[in-house]
Length: 298
Ligand code: ADP
Image (cartoon, rainbow, N blue to C red; front, side):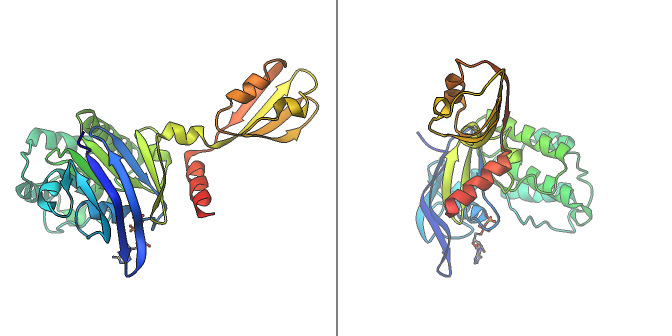
């Protein structure tokens, strides 16, 4: 099977300092993949290597089976790119910018599709880009990346500078592209926004991939607090001594635990007791992400 994006031990060092360290990734057509990490983790470096804007120190990358470095024009023709530091031609109007980029692409452009994108993102393409707000510049950048409906999208922080309503529209549009087989690879430093949209996430820390999994698995493996109230004395400590479960507090009728992973073993252990209330508090995705950074740093 040909992967949409495949990297093999992809490594980049700048002046001897490793920015990306042996990245191995496979992303399939139709998949939305969130590439997460704090600033400086190496996300943009990975995206720039995929576009052959910089050369790897070692390792390789392929887009739909085509080598990103040795066959870069062919690989780029299959790729739509939104840079993190988008630069536009200030004197050109939105639609002139679109025409310019369209003339450089090899795949056919459907004007109806482009107008539909502009309508949904609510951007006036008659204005010169110098008078665009940050949000409008980002909207135009998104249209340019999606212009010729490429099978692979590489988007560096696509929702940055957009208000929540427009962010939702962007995710909707990207979801539609994925539904017709486009692989969407985007970077982000906030996790909350990827919750609804991603199939999988990769977490990068200091150039190293520390996890690749579905968002649900990340959440499932995180630590949560569970407080249980009983209609009488609490179970003895040995009844709730279980792997992955730590007792935090014990009152006459209340127990509080820290649970890593599923709560099922705890619920089974509580089966013989009369539980009147159970409250669980799940960490936010950003807390989960922070946990990964800290764990990997130890
Ligand atoms: P991210 O996109 O996750 O914020 P980057 O890929 O931009 O991270 O940067 C990863 C590391 O590589 C950082 O330490 C950054 O300072 C360094 N770096 C990035 N580009 C260059 C460059 N052109 N020259 C030297 N160091 C660089």
